[in-house]
Amino acid sequence: MTVAVLALQGAFIEHEHMLKKLGVDTIELRQASDMQKDFDGIILPGGESTVQGKLLRDLGMFEPLREKILSGVPVLATCAGMILLAQDIARQDDTYLATIPVTVRRNAYGRQLGSFHTEENVAGIGQVPMTFVRAPYVDALHSDTAGNKPEILSVVLDRIVGIRYKNQLAFAFHPELDTDTRIHESFIEMIHNYLQ
Ligand code: GLN
Image (tube, rainbow, N blue to C red):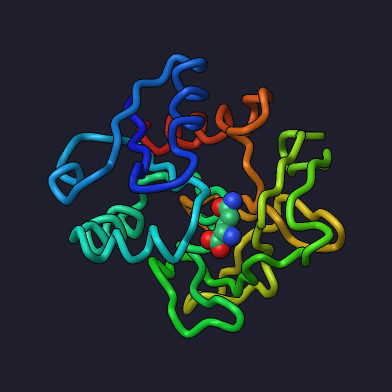
């Protein structure tokens, strides 16, 4: 199994370390030609979604990445990654990959709570440490054309911070910045199911 980590900007190394710890091979997605390589899962890391979105377009990676995701390759997105996947972004016209029918709100916790650490439940996993860094949250879930809505996996401070939609897992916090590996493990299990 090989997982491709989008490595244009942000906290991608931490995801690679976590996968290495779990014995999973990684490759980095840095340019259009990397999209032709063989991989079975994709990680979209935290960072700055506007920068990542622009680089994806400038480097010609945007369409091939979107096609991979729509073809069913499992995706784990954290923080800025969640913003890249959202179909709608509050107070912003630009959207990016737009493969999950949700509205997200960027930098959504205000100045006081710009960055914080907590522990909350993630459906199917249990209590998980959560590090939020100028994080988004999910403002609204929408139905796709088949009437399916994303599933809520986690709620913090009455705000949705974890969702699953088909092959895509998205979290507003940074599981790669804590030592708990269970979110990555559940992603690996998702890839195993996809490969069967
Ligand atoms: N604030 C960032 C954005 O809007 C996300 C922060 C993060 O990924 N830690 O893209």
